[in-house]
Every structure is written in C-alpha cells, then in structure tokens.
Image (cartoon, rainbow, N blue to C red; front, side):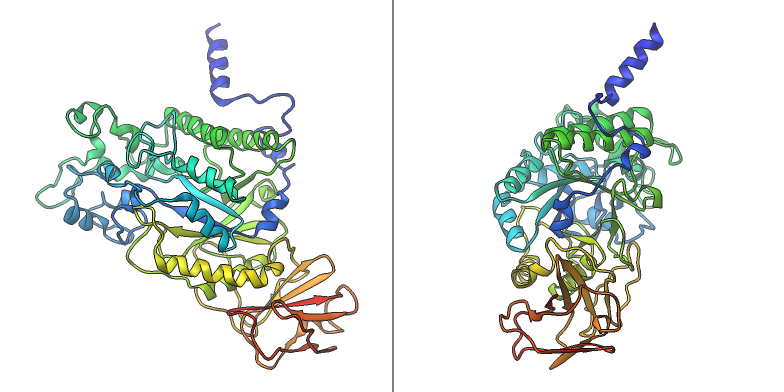
Length: 504
C-alpha cells in the first residue's frame, strides 16, 4: 500500500499525460515531431539576456558565478570588480544585487515594436538564467522578479507585448545548470585577509533577520552546499521540473530554449512531451512548438530544433536548426563593446538561412531596461535591409546547394563568423518557382554565378527574367556552361547584400 502511494505521488509530480496526447516521454515517440512552418518561415528572432546580472555592467557574462572566484576565473575578473564596487561577497553577495535591478525605464511594448521594425518574427526573453532567479511570477522559486527587484512579471509583460504586435513568443530557461554553476558561492577566499570567511552562499534563512531579504532562504537561490562531484539531488531535479512545467503552462510559449542538452533524463523527456502536447491544444490541434537544445545525437535531430551557440553550420542541413549569438561579446550588458555590426549580422543571416537555419540574435539591455543606442542602430539597419530583401529570406526554403564563393564557415559552437563575406560569395534560397541569389557584397558591373550555368546543377528550367530586389527594371543576363552572367544595375538599392530574383 505504501509503495503504491509513493508511485501515485511521483506520477502526480511528473504528470502522466492522457490517452489523447500524441507524444509520450521517450525519443521514439518524440521523433514524430515536425518543425512548424511558422518557425521555418520566420528566419529571424531576438534573444534578450536581462536580469540582476545586468546590474554591474561588467566585462563578465557569468558575473553571478565569477564574482565568487578569487583566483583563476576562466575569463574576466568579476571578483576584483565586485569587491571594489560592492564589497566582499561574504557581506554583499549576488543576492544583494537584486534590489538594485529596478527596470525603471523598461518599456516592453516600445522594445517589441523596435524588434518588429528590425524584421524579427519571434522574441525569446530569458525567463531564468544560470543565476536561478525567475523573471516571472513563479510559484516554486520565491527569488523572482515579482517578489523583489523590479517587482514586475517580466516574462508576462514580454508575452503580452509580443502578442499585441504579432510576434511569436518563446522563453529560455537555464536553471538546470545552477547546481554546479553556483558552487563557488559556497566557498571562501583562498588567500588574503578574508581567507576562509564563508561567502553568502553559506547563509541560511535565519541570517536575514533585519535585512532586506528577511523571510527568504539563500539556499533557494544558491542551492544547498554540496561536494563539487555530487550530482543534483532529486529535490533539486523535481523542483526544476515543477518550475519548468509552470513556465510552460502559465505563459504558453511557442519556443523553449535549453542551454545545453535536454535536462535530467526522464524528467526532461516528460517536459518535452508535455510541451508538444500542450502546445497543440493551445493551437486547436496544430503543434507549433519549437524545442531548442544543443549538440543532440544524430538520431534525435528530427525530434527537436538544434541550436548552435555563437557558431554556424558549414553544411546545408536536412532538419531546421538555429544559431544563437549576441551583438556584444558577452550575453548580458557589459562595457567591452560590440563584436558584430549590421553588415556581419546580415551576411550571417543569409548564410544561415541558405543552410535551412534561423538566426536568434541577442540584445543586452541596460539595468534600467533601456537599449543602448549602438545596438538599436544595428537593429534598425538590419530592418532597413530586410524591408528591401525580406522576400529572399522570409518563407523561403533552401536550394540543392547553399551557395558558392571563397568564404567557408567552420561549423560548430563558438566558431562565430565575425568578419563580412566577400562580393564573390553568393547564397541561395527558393520560394515556389523562384530562386534567390544573394550577393554578399557589390560585385561591380556584372556578376557570374557558376552554379547557375546551363551545364551546371539541375534547376527549375529556362530562366524567364532576373531582377534585383528593390529595383523594378529587369536585368540583362546571359547563360552558358560556365555560368549565369548578370549585368548589375547602375545604383544600389540598399547596403551590405543584394538579392537577385531569378524567375523560371
């Protein structure tokens, strides 16, 4: 009897689904998945890293972890910055940055309108980063943006604005990593006058008496202290499951981004199945769900949408995929400047789309919720280009080859293309009986496209006409076994890249 009660309780925690649900929590069932057309048509989305980690505006994308590493931090030196600006992490820890995040200038509707003007078709705010702080009205994590900090439902307000202006809505959740990520918060200095003094990750609920965080337990934020080799315990995993399922059910996203593989074995599979099944119910039986994970095995690439972080694919891929990258070198706002410009973003977008992918481009808001002018201008420049050339991007599908030219991408994570392509690089997309050849630079008076020669790859048939998007007048062309030669117009219709529309 007791065992039966335990089993029933576990099923209630995990969720059992119903007989009508098409997806079950195993990979064989999830392989029924088909990537929805909305995602394949959208091509371009905006990612938003923003939260308490934005407060320092420091040169460190993992500030909440690195501020507890006195020596040997992998990059940056958040510890020294933190001690200088806020005090020692035994007295002023990461939790104490939360009240400083006030979001006093944050206008989600204005920002969503800007992202739409930039040409984005979906938005993905960070619902919870590795710092374990929920940017939404969370039942299971008291350290959240409604209870403290800005005291606003950040995810809910992003969701409302996205729906109002017709953008698809997604969320990212990184909290499966918190267990190991916050381990340094449980340590202490290894040298100097504060050697051995515990950081605030060792504090308990009782330590908050008379302080701003009274009534809250730091261990709900930092996790309980544990050995570095100890895997996450069941209490942590079950809490992750309940938080993630609530995020899905309460905000009904069409996209969920996990910063790694599918977490926690059968718990992650139950989340995936629940997301797919629930999403179809929200859309009258049509599954519009997109689940982003990284580095999946070849067999399961059909069951999800693979994400490549700060990198691209070197090949045309069978299944839709996504690049996520950031305008700045980090993810949260910092003082190190931008690593991408409008030209590179547009060239990478064309390369990604030609290979059956999407671009999810991160912007980093200031602590007050405003967007720095340099990032705003890049978005406006990308939007201006898409106003002219969006026909060659949105709703397209890849051709038999992705393109031609001298530039070759090194595929994989953290191998980002940060330099422009050349005028000899061409990327192809298709739509119906039209082929788009996007020149990633101005070639001069004419361009020869070798892949479209009469003796080259099979194509749609005889070419009826060629024009350049943004220019009404048809272009003069000739074709032989060596390639298709097109005479360029006298004036450029835009900057950065130029799309030839080849009608058959």
